Picture 1 (cartoon, helix red, strand yellow):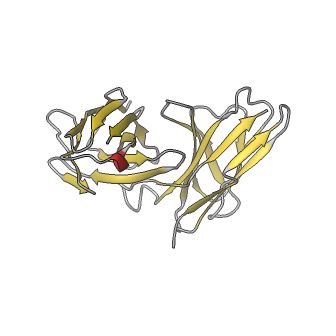
Picture 2 (tube, each protein chain N blue to C red):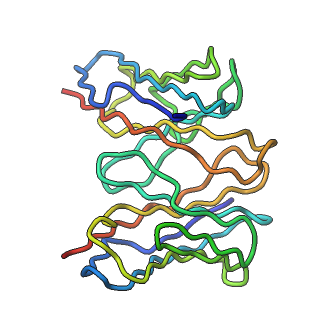
Length: 112
Length: 116
C-alpha cells in the first residue's frame, strides 16, 4: 500500500537558517503530493501541493519539488522565522482514492 | 467565508459517558473524515463518508460511531467502549475523488477531549 516517510523531529533552527524537511513516499501510479502545516492547538492547513512529476509547489517562502525518480517531496525554505514553528506533515493521495496517506509529522522549532 | 467548524473546542468527559463532537462544513464537499491525533503522533483515520447516508470505518473505528444525515454535518460519538479517548480530534472534508482526483483536504480547528 501507499506510505509516506518523513524525517523525525524535532528540527531545531535559529531564525534565518535554511530549512529542509525530507519526505519520501511509495505509491502505485502517480499520486498527488502535499505538505500541510499544523500550528499549536490548531487543525492542519494546506501549505503547498504538486500533482505531477517535476511540479514545484510553493507558498509563503516554502517550496517542494515532486521528484518521481527519487520518490521524494522535500520541503525547503531559505530563511525560517520564529512564526514558522509548527508541525509539518507530508501526504500523498493516489488518483481516485478518498483516503490520503500522511507521514507522522515533523516538528520545527525556530529560536530567535 | 467557507470552512469547517468543530465544537466544542474543549470537552471533558467522565468515564462511562458517551459524548458527541460536532463537525459542520459549508464548502459543499461530499466527502468528510474524522481523525484522531495523540501527542507527538500522526493522524489516524476513525471514519469517513463519501456521500450522505453512507460511511465507512477507518483504521481505529472501535468505540466510535458516526452519522451522515446531511451533507454539511458529520458528528462523531465517542462511546464508553472507547478505552482511551483522551486525544485531539480533527474533522476534514474534500471534494469527491471523481470530481477532482488530486484534491486536498480541508481541516477544522479540532476538539480536545479529556476523560476525567
